[in-house]
Image 1 (cartoon, helix red, strand yellow):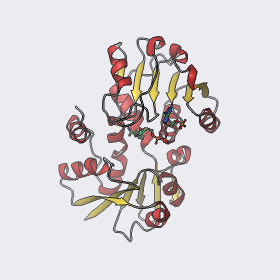
Image 2 (tube, rainbow, N blue to C red):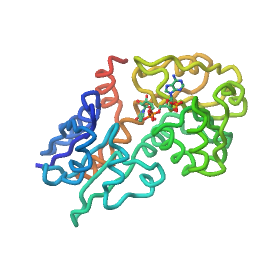
Image 3 (cartoon, rainbow, N blue to C red):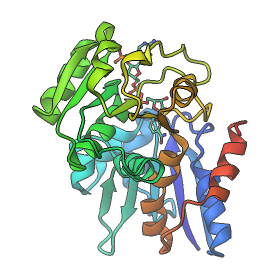
Length: 277
Ligand SMILES: NC(=O)c1ccc[n+]([C@@H]2O[C@H](COP(=O)([O-])OP(=O)(O)OC[C@H]3O[C@@H](n4cnc5c(N)ncnc54)[C@H](OP(=O)(O)O)[C@@H]3O)[C@@H](O)[C@H]2O)c1
């Protein structure tokens, strides 16, 4: 029996077991997917001894994504650009390989839910400069976006990302975010604002062009106030749950040998655990 797990601290909140166990059952695979609560001081040792714990690989969630990247023998281009890993597997030679599938998940979901998002080749506005923002910037630049306006409450963090990702990324003051929407074809929220238990995201969409797409990577609630406002004014709204589901695909394929599908049934199954529609 093949086994994989999600490693985090805490790990109780993780939706990964719901996703992977759904696929294991659907495809009739003799496998298991566990939750591993590992405190920070034990994370590196645990990750380095996945085989000893009986695992073919793992997902890694907060706060261990950086340690996972550093502990791996081989990290791919996405993990290196993002500076963090969320998916690990042991290859045929027993080496620990690492990738980051958040950019893949974000872009696959965006292309699926709003296929014409880059038709006008207009600038993109990204809110936030945390770990998820790095993945979104990497995905957008790989997809050929030519200009990204990046606004974050702590401007220094946005400037660090602009340096890391190059001249396509220009920082905008957090206070100037409403005005900067005027020329944009896509707005992406990567802050935790709007998430259940967090403060609201305050933004005025009045200047955002009618044909622009609005994506929120927050998935709890599924329909954030940002997405509801965008939808009400006619913009295409892209929720964050699709990103979460798609980012799980490459890991499942590595560990269990089947490339799983993200279907409306899976989305409804996971949404039900969020108390969402
Ligand atoms: N859909 C998915 O698959 C997926 C994947 C990854 C993450 N996410 C979601 O994305 C969100 C961010 O995750 P992360 O890992 O990037 O977190 P993070 O590294 O902690 O970054 C949090 C970001 O939110 C901003 N922020 C927090 N409180 C704020 C406030 N009161 N006012 C203004 N800005 C505020 C932070 O700004 P400062 O820099 O100023 O603190 C930072 O830019 C979370 O809700 C997470 O659940 C979703």
